[in-house]
Image (cartoon, rainbow, N blue to C red; front, side, top):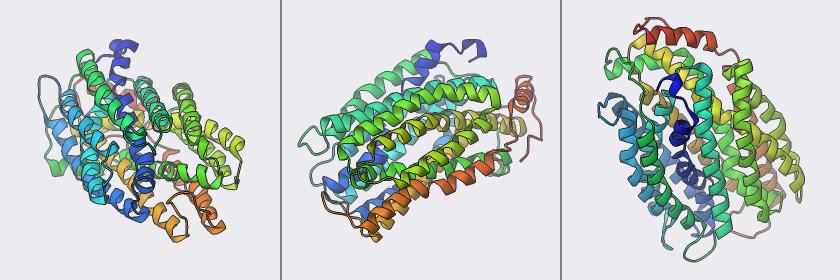
Length: 448
């Protein structure tokens, strides 16, 4: 797709599948552990272990899917072909995870959760690689990312509303079952529209690399190493409060009836933050805009650790402000990743967006797994009880507050240090694109 083809209707068609993908993502990471613990009576520590194992097993699929999507030469396009192939499989696995039988156990969750995670990779990895290649422009990439992530937030809002509006403790069609039905209907329809309306850009590959040589170049791409390390740290920081959100609102604030409204407020404000992030990035650059947002998030979110019973209004303000900053986390890192891939293509001669986003997906999954594998055992060790309406000890509530509000600050600060002086800015990216579009390559790229 040339820069002149970056029209809103086409970008909208590309972005629409992000809605059902987001509809299943938030419940899987936030609601499913709570639902399986409280409604099905599974052990919290066991759930944490199962989620960790799912991510570890799924990590093996990311490099394979990414490598294959880079190497395929199908008429429908290497990104679009893998994307549409995995759509029905993903919808079916989501149905099994979100509408489990009453006797579902940890083994059931492990099998179908792993299958869903693998198929979700098969859809989202070529989908995001496709988006990274849609625009050759430094700022245009932020716009593509903003369309997709804006749609992601629409889907997230649906995921927030459905489980709580329908109810998680109902027999039959409970809230997660409603999510399953929506995904089964919406994902295939939007995927077909995207493949129909949005072409793939020309492949800029000028030579093929052997797998070992390609991985060596990836590991030696210093801007990428810095970016993915920062992305992992920030993702880990965001995953901790996401994992604990329902418990924090219910037990620490004593406001279980506001769990849904708070989540809705947070992600609705994230929709405001996405275009704000694009505007700020145009002025100061993508990496500096992202760093500024992370600094603000540390200052604002840390205040949540001082809240107690009934502090709903203060927490609502924190949700609104950090929701706006979420827009920066969503829109800017993938746009920076597209610049990193260009740098690699100029050096290696092979456009390997699939492999790069495989590493990206791996970092996302490991950050989520690390958060679940860390915080649930720590909560259980502190004496926190997750099995219904019980009175928590002061020590357990203090542990919950510390984990929720203050632990995420440390990895965010580390991410800021890594990204503040990031070497790929607007001028460097323009030079790289000039080289690529002339059909050339360079044995040297931008370093650390």
